[in-house]
Image: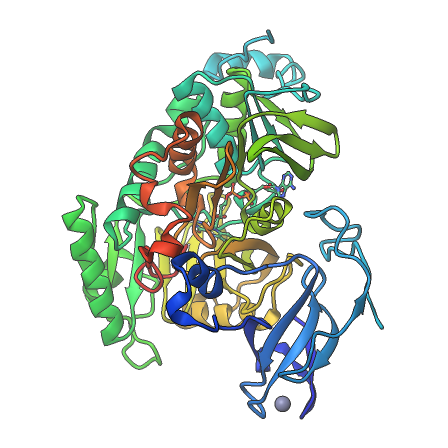
Length: 117
Length: 420
Ligand SMILES: Cc1cc2nc3c(=O)[nH]c(=O)nc-3n(C[C@H](O)[C@H](O)[C@H](O)COP(=O)(O)OP(=O)(O)OC[C@H]3O[C@@H](n4cnc5c(N)ncnc54)[C@H](O)[C@@H]3O)c2cc1C
Ligand SMILES: [Zn+2]
């Protein structure tokens, strides 16, 4: 559980929000020329990243606005928030060293740290 | 060759009691990895260990290593609420899960290891008209597939599980339930340990504290892995890493349709036997049973976002407890003792992926999400077949990665009750 700083309402509990999943996935531009594999990739395949993820959130029990969040999925630490349609912001730091590395401390998986640029 | 492990029996128990339990043989060896194996299994959870066990037992492949980054059974295998059932809706799933349930029925004898499999029945409760229709549909589908299933009306539910609240004045009253009597629970750690011991006895190397950090591929064929214990070569690699499957797939540029999310469970203080079965409710999202130690074992839902933090939200636990207390008001003053999370790999159609890949010799077994414990023996059985023959077994043929392109999804969402 964590807090999300809604750009419109301020800091609220995560349970007020709904996650819309990975951001910056765009629909194939030319449907008739898109193969089954390309459709599968667009519809189903996900980065499911352990580390810095760019994702969409909706303040569903609040102002109901969409926005993008940068979050470290191994610690749930939020590194940035930006508007829909904006380019991916730059984030300093590295994804967890050992790819499936479990935590240095407790079960929080704090094996890396990220800084906002 | 290593010393064959001694069988457990009443005599070995007495003999070891007389020597103050100081001479028990370790249940499996802890060897250093060899340079090369005929097959490598990444992930020492239940599914990885059963894969190794059946590769050795059914296909005579004994020069195998199971590589586990932590300790065996430390992943979801040791974190789940141990519900075992086979009452799935679709034929494909019914085949896979029923095959597993049959293996559960002979497991303790086969392994000479008590996995405490208890067929106390699983009741899936309906609270709305829609639930009733869904569950009755599943009941009929199960009967057509020769899977035992009964429909209980509200009175029969009360008769079977007397402590359940059947008042019609609650927000989600009990309108009936399906009951699978052959379903039940088992001791999860024992499953990992029993299969580890069985695999080890046939010569399989179980290597703990050995994390795979990359996979080597030469000309479209796997050649081995890099690990925290050095390079280990093999031309066949089976990946069975549950919540971390996408991380491993990313090492070789394979994309999977998975999302990894926290799923939580909690147990109460131990009390005398009070609940005789497993009660599951999809609509209000509660499921509860009682362990042999007397603790209530309660499962919560997943968080709605990707996370590898192994910690879920408190609001999820709160909702679960609210639902359990409405169904069982007498639990309202029980204290909860422990609470934890696991990272589950959720597939868009809530069905697993047990599949070859476009890289030769590389196989994936994942996507079991919130409900793969029940499949542990069956999953290893069909995955061993897939690895040994480079072709899926007929039971896992519908569960390939290809189905996401062909559109032949096995949609068990909703149909399968809470997906546990
Ligand atoms: C709270 C909870 C409740 C559940 N309840 C039920 C239930 O009631 N019934 C049911 O049927 N299912 C249930 N499940 C789901 C079930 O636990 C899983 O589907 C099943 O245990 C998966 O087994 P596995 O062997 O594939 O995964 P795991 O046991 O997670 O094993 C995967 C292993 O891979 C290892 N690994 C990962 N990365 C690497 C690497 N790079 N190198 C080496 N090793 C690595 C991990 O350390 C781990 O031990 C539940 C899950 C949770 C979390
Ligand atoms: Zn808002």
